[in-house]
Each structure stands twice: as C-alpha cells, then as structure tokens.
Image 1 (cartoon, rainbow, N blue to C red):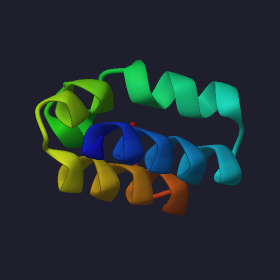
Image 2 (image 1 turned 45 degrees about the vertical axis):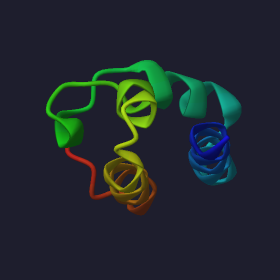
Image 3 (image 1 turned 180 degrees about the vertical axis):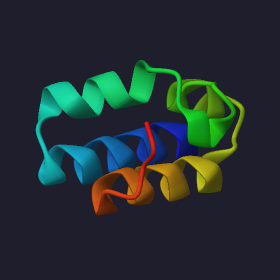
Image 4 (image 1 turned 135 degrees about the vertical axis):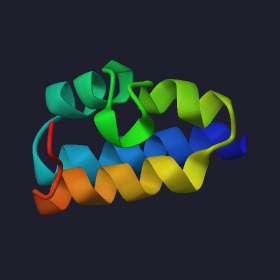
Length: 65
C-alpha cells in the first residue's frame, strides 16, 4: 500500500503543477535524476524518497531533463 500511496502522491504533485498527461509521462519515462530509471521502477523497488526528490525538482523547474 505504501508504494501505491507514493505513486498517487507523486502523480498528484505533478498533476497539480502541470496536468495529468505530464504526470503520467513523468512516472513512466527514464529520469536522469534516477540514473536513467523510471520513477515507477524506483517506486516498485521502494526507493520512494528518491522519487519524491526527483518530483520536487521537476515541479520546481530545476529538473535537467
């Protein structure tokens, strides 16, 4: 349940800052802040704090990809 809650929280964070299509794409796209892995992979591997940091950077506009 923790992973589902984390995925939902990250989705909502990005959706609120942009829109649902961007949030969906962000979760399933390779992310340089996560070593080229997808946020969904990191959530599945319980690396949730890393995903929260990457999402916050994306929303703040300090994401470099």
